[in-house]
Image (cartoon, rainbow, N blue to C red; front, side, top):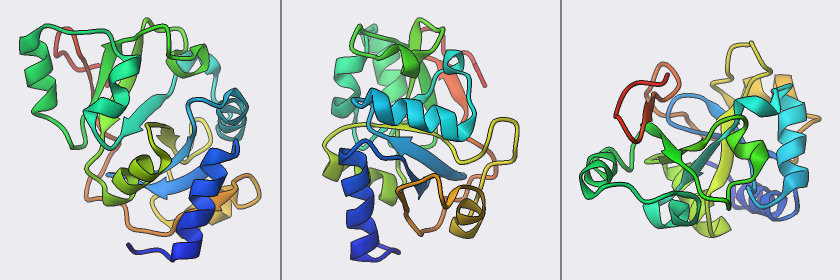
Length: 185
């Protein structure tokens, strides 16, 4: 891992104690927290200055971590989606009642991704479930791509910043509709 053991442990402690962290993802740094902590989700929204109606993404290490949040799909659609994971593709998926309103926003779906980024994978495995994720930037600003940029923007707002390398994407991951396969973003 490209970060220190203590830095990583601090990030896990923050996730388990209503904190918000920053970490590298496939394209940019992400801000994340536990989807099970309304306090943490509200803090993340405030830090980002994001309207709750826009919703947030859930990222995971594997599909099983997302299962409780997702309505079933046809076998054909499921096979098509699973072929894109792990990887830098997000899907707007019909949600279950287990998805908090602050995560799905004004939508009837929740955006989910099984990440291939090793830091995200390890965080989700060690945390024991998916994380809320959004790009590390204030609403309307350019997302941070390095730990130094995150420190400059958010150092006093976050409980932990994992130092690491973002993946090779040059823009945020695309989002597709899980029912139709059409591009959402």
